[in-house]
Image (cartoon, rainbow, N blue to C red; front, side):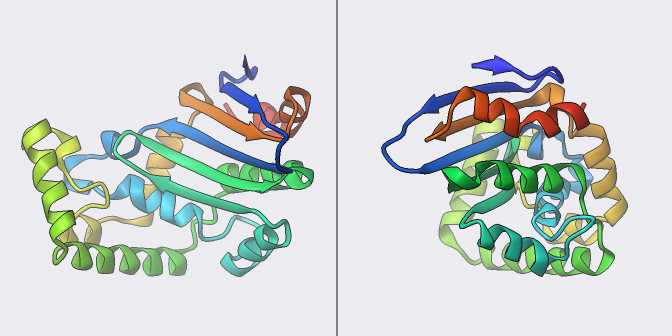
Amino acid sequence: NFNLANGVIVNGITNSELPLVQFQLRLKGGLLLDQPEKTGVANLTAVMMNRGTANKTVAELEEAIEELGASINVRSGQQYITISGNTLARNFQATINLVEEILLEPRWDETEFKLAKQSVLSQIATQSANPNSIATNTFNKLIYGENNILSSNAIGTTITVEGILLEDLKNYYNSYFSATVASYEVVGAITEENVKMALSGIEQRWN
């Protein structure tokens, strides 16, 4: 266990039974930092970060990940945004290079934003007819109280999501994506030295 110079807390466990590595980078935030009238911004920010980078289209990013036999996924929850994934141990450095690109070089493409927004609106519509989703949302209101942001649906409502602009995502990213509120966990066939080397780009470029 160690800290990067930029403040990211790193925790790891070496397990060499299989030549695989699992990891997750967690940032404090998520729904907790959304504005009540714009619930769903954190979730849409995470959705957009799966849709390409400044230098890669969606297809190019997916292809780069697949070529490594890896998976990388960005998602937002109630109190965290998480970039998680797994990869073959021999491709760990290359996979983390893609994580670095996803984290530090978002695409912010207007067309992809419209598609992401439509996808979330469809998800909200599906949830509205799902008994389990209705029960979860009702339970959260009972636990947290109507006026607590955590009682809201993390992906937003039809009204709040329709009002979200791409600029809102950029503002969320610029305000809350900070190394000082991040932690990194890794498990697998990897040494501490390998992890330090793989994360050196994130350590140097992210603050």
